[in-house]
Length: 377
Image (cartoon, rainbow, N blue to C red; front, side, top):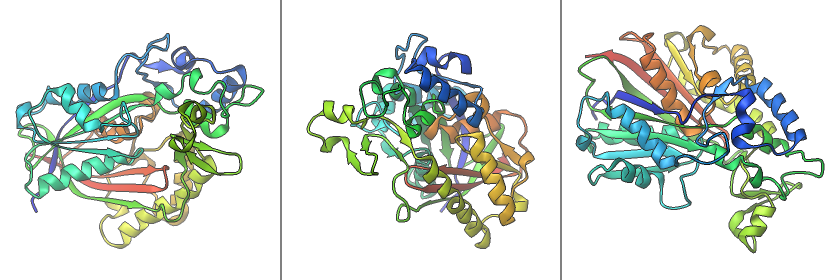
């Protein structure tokens, strides 16, 4: 096995930044009651600006595949190789533009690259780690010398009022169920891209991928974040395709994105326990981490993570945490790539530093960690 390096990064955030006062101009007003609850959610997540792939009238302006391709073009403008040298493409998303085909096919088409191997990873946030690990192993094994990794999300398309009105998701007073309302005010759109090669970039800094660990705990948890599933008051879950018609599935709220906040918080100790396992195995030392690049969906979850890590004795000092959540929002499967892009461009990295990446996923309890080392050719 040979080493593999992240040699270039790119990003694409559609439209101008949208502040908290402008959210409903883009995703629309469901009801006064829903707006009041949304303001409470904003106090919890503390996101100040985000980006939407729809204009101020709520009209969509792009696609998931096109955003992914735009992030890749941003990367290729700075990469030290020709686009034709890329022979592998791995993508990550919670949902592509359609149910089929996979996102990688769409990004490949948008970029117009020659025929190449592709891999479409679909989950929630941790699909970014899945795609990156796929690329890392392909390059490390000598299968490919240039792998493009793309993460893209278009969450806001599910947040327009028409996806809630006249469905079981909203009650007689116009209030959305809490598991739906939190995501409406937290998720946003965009894409990020990484290039993985078997050697560092000639100029500037690269990130050597030392290892990537992914572990699912779905054997212990019911689904926490869902889409395409109708959730009844008694906890029963029915896939959209099990309803007698698409219209009935929509009326039951099957096309609503949901996240169970109580189940999410129950996962925090499991995610922390996985970090402690990696420490016990000698794969990472808390004191050797120079930068902790952790994707978290809201500031309130960060505070809970800090409280648990401090009690467990494995707290990485906060001055080593790097985040862009408050300015760029929670962009799901694109978040890790946007974080690494911003960190590499920040001017704060030096050769020899150690980066620990963490991407917890609430879908059905999944956690990904990755260790990287900053290198300079």
